[in-house]
Length: 191
Image (cartoon, rainbow, N blue to C red; front, side):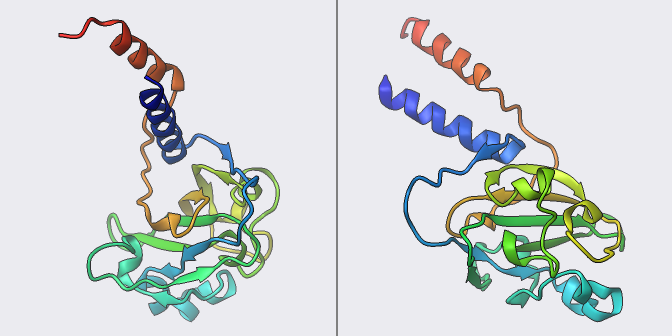
């Protein structure tokens, strides 16, 4: 019974992190900084200076189509060590070029933007909390004058944790639902 309960709690936590639940990272365990995937979709590299991305973003280790799924077979996306124990982040931008085009940006919270993330409110919480949420680019950046673009941003704590896909439609995340399911399973007689 206890292992089942622990598994349920872990699954509930993972689903809430993926679906927008906000959780503080557990910093009680000593250790070094995280390694995070560092990449941007090839589109950003092709338009780096023309569109002005070089005035907003820190250049990643690579511009690649593999940034969409850095752990896919054949993918060769490199990682970087985050200097300050901040979370890894993934940003997914709806690019206004064509229908359904998305740009992927992955890296450390501390070295995505030249001027850094806005350190207040939800953008600041991305550094030490795990959650996903939509943002306007202008609310994320601490300085400069970025274009106003819509993006989904997820933060996570752990080595190379920013490999996951970012869903724009969250899953239900109430722990009460999962506890009710557990109680039903425990109370229902075994067949």
